[in-house]
Each structure stands twice: as C-alpha cells, then as structure tokens.
Amino acid sequence: MALVTMKALLEQAKKEQRGIGAFSVGNMEMVKGALEAAEELKTPIILQIAEVRLKHSPLALMGPMMVQAAKEAKVDVAVHLDHGLTMEVVKKALALGFTSVMYDSSAYSFEENMARTKEVVAAAGEYGATVEAELGLVGGSEDGSSDHGVKCTNPEDARVFCENTGIDALAVAIGNAHGNYPVAPTLAFDVLEEIHKKTNLPLVLHGGSGITDADFQRAISLGIVKVNIATASFNSLTAHAQEYLRTQGGHNYFALNEAMVRGTYENVKHHIEVFNCEN
Image 1 (tube, rainbow, N blue to C red):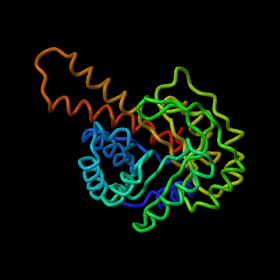
Image 2 (tube, rainbow, N blue to C red):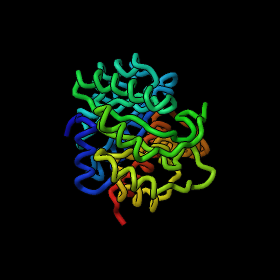
Image 3 (tube, one colour):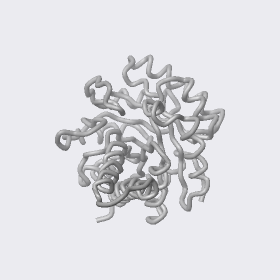
Image 4 (cartoon, helix red, strand yellow):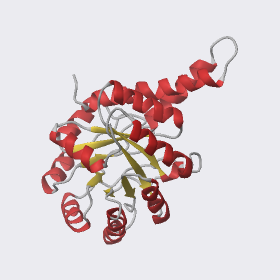
C-alpha cells in the first residue's frame, strides 16, 4: 500500500471504532515480524522507535529501513518517533521520512509542555507530519532507566492543551506504565471517559504491554485510538530466540533470524486482533 501519516491511520481507526497498534521495533527481524502480521490480517499499523532505544538501534540505520519497509508494505503503515527527548532527534526523524513524531515533555510544567509541544508542531508542519504529545505522567520509562511516578491526566488540562498546541493525538495517563507490570494495572476509565468528552482528538495509551485484552477494548470504546506495544514484543522475540537456542544440534543465524521474526509476529498479530475488537 503506502507510507502514510499517522493522522490518516488514526482517523480511519476512529471512524471504524477500533484501535490501531503502534509497535516498537529495534531491528530488522522486528520490522519483518510486525509487517508480516499486519499484512496477514490486512490491517494498517504504526512502526515506531523511542529515542532511548537509539543507543542500541541507531536512527541512521533503523529510520531508513522502517520508512522503506512501510513504502513496500501491502498495508498502509505510518512511521513514528516515540518519546523523542531532543529537538535534534525529532528533526532528524522528520528528515529521514518519519510521518509522525512525539516529543515527550510530560515531566515539565504544564506551560513548558505546551511551549515545547508547539515548537514540535511547527517543525513537523514543514513535513506534513503528525504530532503526538503526552499530558500527565505515565509510569516508568521505555528502557526502565527512570520512573517519575504516575500522575493521571487532568481532563480540563487536556482540553486546554489540545486547543492551544495544534497536536493531532494526545497520550494520556490513566494508571498505565511502561515496561513489565507486576500485575495488570487498574485503569481509571472514569478519567479516560471525561478526557474523551472534553477533547476531540484521538487518545493514545502508552505502556500497553501487560494490560488485559478486555481493558484494551474498553479503553478503545472510551476514546483510545492508538495503543503502544513495546515490551511485549521484545519479550516475545527473546523467548523465541531462547527456545531456538535450547534446541539440540548446531545453531545458525538464519534460523535464529526466523525465530526472532516469529516471536515478533505472534505478539503483533495477537494485539492487532484485540485492537480490531474481534471476539
């Protein structure tokens, strides 16, 4: 199909009353596995990578691969920079052809978050790219290196933020957290419902790995359109690689490659089916 903006995919998913998966990738095998699942299910997806992952998966290598893979995919695919931390990386992603960016200023004051977000909106506008921002504090961090705690998004702040920044999607904090949950979290669906009523933008759920299928679908019914999945894919890839390496006989890269692709594929396929709200 085509490389498309994330905004186009969010609008389509919102119209069809389903969620769209944003799947973090860190290597070629993850890109292949995610696209294989999307193409099999004939469902558009978002490929994304967070700035904290770039020390292991450099943007100069991952970016062009993700963009080209999207262009050659049999379904529509958006390519997104997740949790950008510096304007330098945001601008580099845009120059590489990413169709969406997020600059995470959620740990700053409300006013500073708005100011920084407006700067990103202006930069992305030069490329026609989508902008996601975050309000409130989602627990943990993408690589597990920090945790600012959890602070639920204030619905009235969300209204003001959306009206004054020009963003296309808003990531909200409703008890969700990045990384592995010790137990499935208790999500504040009442807060989510109120945010949905006060804003007219697609809402985003970060920290999706470990949330129950039923809670995903309830969240989608209350305004969540984009759902981020990272840890679950990395865990599934690792488990499949370990399973292969425990088999008898010699091992080789090519079979290991297939195991990693399979691990990503199975996790992505499961979540697409859930986000499509299939029984």
